[in-house]
Image (cartoon, rainbow, N blue to C red; front, side, top):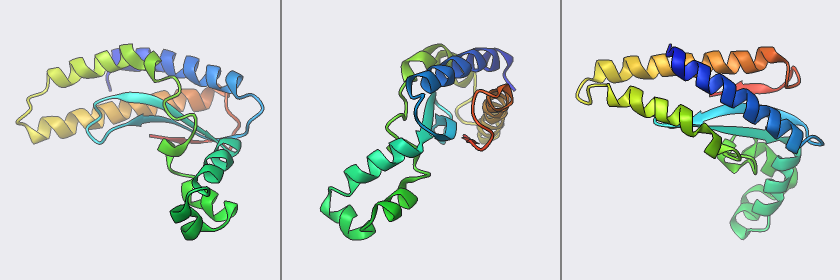
Length: 151
């Protein structure tokens, strides 16, 4: 785990998720996540609500190809539910992760780019850090118990 990254990301994630809950107080959350790339090159926020999901599904259903494929709002929401990039709140507060992303960049700058072992070890430690932050958010109780936390 990376302690400095953990501290920064924990503060940022708690602030961002609290602000999201306040901003969308009338909505029902089903997912909260830290979103990153396969290379763990950045981290941002993403949350999903049932209301946002229906909004996006309705938008997709205005397009012929998706209307033909899914046909109904129910099938569209099923198809879109676990696609965080389609949430209207995906990366809503991404700019607030700048300090955490600078720490991530510093971590990667210290890794030998020719060592697959070092790359995999770094990914594992970053994942540990992200997951520890998500556990802290979950355990804080800011979200309802049935919200799924993802990385």
